[in-house]
Length: 330
Image (tube, rainbow, N blue to C red):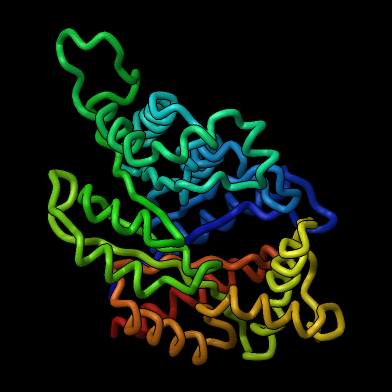
């Protein structure tokens, strides 16, 4: 059975704050570590009241310090927001502190709205130079030449594993051309999943970092003791997507018994289309949905995510998925 990993956004729930979000992220990562998950990734977002992982590298350090085995990384750092040298120094520092446990996933989007992207200064210039910046970042992790005037300290020679992330075809093609592992954001952008994976595999060129294609896709999972409870847990994320689509993102709301009581039919359908690739329900239902998604995509790794209001429910969902993975492996 392929490895399973976890993507977390450090959600800020209604009635909570960023400190609680970071505490719950660490608790989730410790559970994933205990349950044998391969990676625990955090994503860069800005100006979103319901997501705390803005300073992604710092939160990665917080999680890595509180776990023992699991790889910790970015899913991802939005490279056009940053100078490649700064990213190399940050992740070189992380790799130095937690050797062999750090991943660097890179995205091309700003991770925010247009006004905030302008406040970040670099995005609108950097997005067009994404391929160049990826190559530059890779070079900062190579051993420094004897007379090299600028080097990443720490960073040079550490060769931190780099992934390209995407929700379109652009990064799929680039990852193939550069010979890098690739992860597709099918948890919120399902439309191009299969086409992107096919393009990546078709265009893959072996590199000194990767000999053969290595693809991962992200699946929403809301696993509980019963199908009805799984459906109920998913209503928090449905509400969150509905608010985001109206331009009014907020903190993650609690689940509701009847989603039709709080969202319009149009909002429900919009959220459902965004959450096309999801595993929702009790243990048997989720196991089948996991198996179906792996068979459909033929991915080399599966990453799960799920914006749930209650910490205990999030951890229990991880436990149910880990149990399902063991049964699928058997």
